[in-house]
View (cartoon, rainbow, N blue to C red):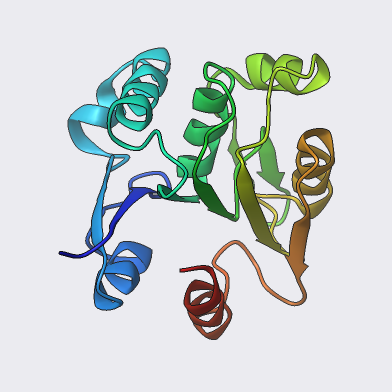
Amino acid sequence: MAELIYYLPGYGGQLRTGLGKALMDRGFDVTGRETRGDFARMPFSDQVEVVVDDLKTHFWNENARVVANSFGAYLFWHAQTRMDSFPGRVLALSPIVGVFANQDSGINFMPPCTEQLQEAIEQGRLVAPRVCEIHTGSEDWQSEPAAVTALGQAMGVSVTVVPGNGHNLEIPYVAALLERWL
């Protein structure tokens, strides 16, 4: 029986494509929440509660593995503010940690409840999972390296800033990371 991984993809992401497919290609069963469709239409606080319930009900052990990408990591951070330290292992890739903007393209994004997450960080209510790795690209304007590093410092988690990479970390880097992490 294949090991199970809880996956939270980026905004609009699917479990069976991209990173989810890469996990399945390595022989893992992938479950989690697609950040689209009915789930995406739920109020954000309900989305967070679903993630909390999933983790506490099915993944609350030291062997559990969570992979959270981009907006999926944002959901995970919010869930972590409502739980004790997650007892398993968490891999966060290009995590969203708040508002971001790209002046060149004019694209702005303000995820829900940014103030709540910032307050949780400042008040020490965002505790680190038992084992956590965070990776972001040096050229990532959505997961700005300085903001991601500050998040890591607040939780006592090291952050790897990948030189020359943007929001979508390069496939060879992610492939090597998955081989080591899994």
